Length: 393
Ligand code: NDP
Ligand code: MG
Image 1 (cartoon, protein in one colour):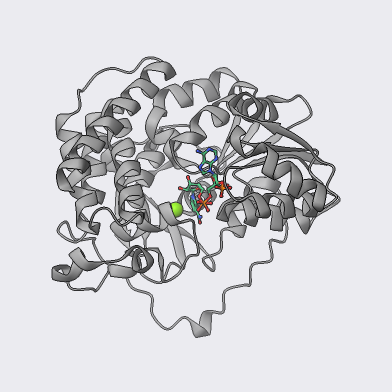
Image 2 (tube, rainbow, N blue to C red):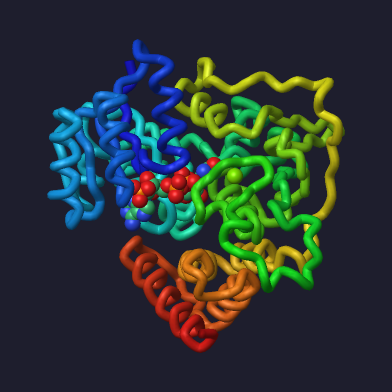
């Protein structure tokens, strides 16, 4: 029986995690779930999975939430605030933590789980983008077990040999990591109409159902850029080891190319319950509720290279990756500010890349040797992005 904390339980990954867990009541029990603003959904989840603790990251919502819990006759204990988030990740009863808070807010609780030596199921790519080396050092130091949930990284993990040594591609005869991406909803929209893209259009991904922030990132392919950085840290890669390939059908989730000409790919329907269940049960496999692929119905299977003019954010993120940790922290922070402004109707879709590019150019390139420095650098990049944003309005 594994005991699990689900960070960001009210989100898309969080709800899929509870769905998989609910299918295996004899194998998993929920210790704690956390949520931020969706109080009704959090109550429902607490009832569904009989969580021992429910954590509200925003203490101001406590009274409203308490009334909703009483009305639902739900007896899970309510905890609030940042310390509670850390506590439910590091509690001795917990062996697995699903890290599925969106954005930089996920960094500190995820690190708590790492420092407590837990199995960490990493969906929150932003924490690795912000603090890559420091994060991986903590994983090693505290003997945490880090398993990727992002579908591409989970696919790569499945395609690597079991004895893969971190960063040692040569030893395993690996020549390339092929990171696939669908290209999002605007893969064939004329670039001249990008200025009039609305938030709802950007969030309507053709293959995946996801939270709004990652949906916009997928439309701009910043998501693939963040995943490029994530792959570097997860597997110890050099930038030249990774190639991004457009695959609009989202059937192949990523591939590993070997020296003998073999390419090993992981395929499946685009449903996050596959990587989630693999992380939960690794190294075994359990049912996830995902339908098997029906090969005869797969009409197209195509591949191409993502264009620079269509997807500037992808190339900015790769450039940041080459520059180093302070650049990836800065572009991640800028992107969070820009995407939020886009979702709130304050800027155009094309302004996201403008803001990211300017912050990347203007922020200092410094060595970040502690998490406190990472957070300070993140904060500076956010203020810079907000200043640029004000000038645009
Ligand atoms: P959602 O927006 O659907 O969910 C985000 C979760 O984070 C919610 O539970 C939300 O609470 C919580 N949250 C938001 N802001 C805060 C905050 N300031 N403090 C604490 N909690 C907060 O996102 P997704 O589930 O789509 O994505 C989650 C993470 O997983 C992201 O990092 C994303 O990049 C990654 N990921 C997602 C994939 C997907 O298919 N969705 C695929 C691969 C990676 P509430 O809703 O109650 O406000
Ligand atoms: Mg992904």
